[in-house]
Amino acid sequence: MKHKKILFVCTGNTCRSPMAEAALRAELKRRKIKWYRVLSAGISATPGHPMTDFCRQALTEAKIPFREDFVATPLTEEMVRSASIVICMTGEQAELLRRFDNVTSFPRLCGKEIPDPYGRGIDIYRLTLRLIREGMPRIVAAYCPKIEN
Image 1 (cartoon, rainbow, N blue to C red):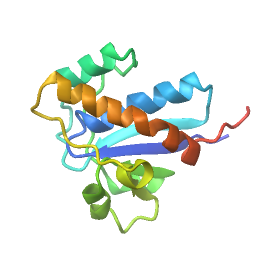
Image 2: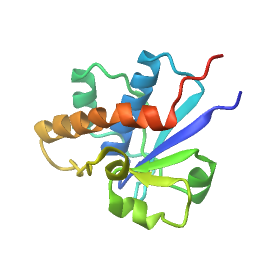
Image 3: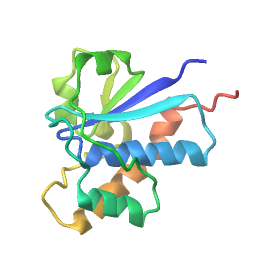
């Protein structure tokens, strides 16, 4: 069976979308749901930039595994087209990609914008991760039904 791709998108791909990627992977693993590939990218990402230190710290504190070799990936049209669903962290980001039928936003799905924590302190990163994690059950229910293998 072919894996479905879920793509999270933010601005720089160093904070929000990597946290959402890691959080959804952890949630799918916890629920023993397979056949999904979870990725992230940034609308204005600089290729190769690492995840921020506070992002790593917040994920580590929450005991959410993440790819140690993670680097920012710029969003491409091919990435959007090949994804089953693209989830932007804000409505504004989703609006930039409105020409694609598979694009939605975190606020549309979960009722909350995910503000950019970049350049702020660890407490804001913890809050950002908490908001992302609170939305994961809705995302799983909407896009990740359990597929028996």
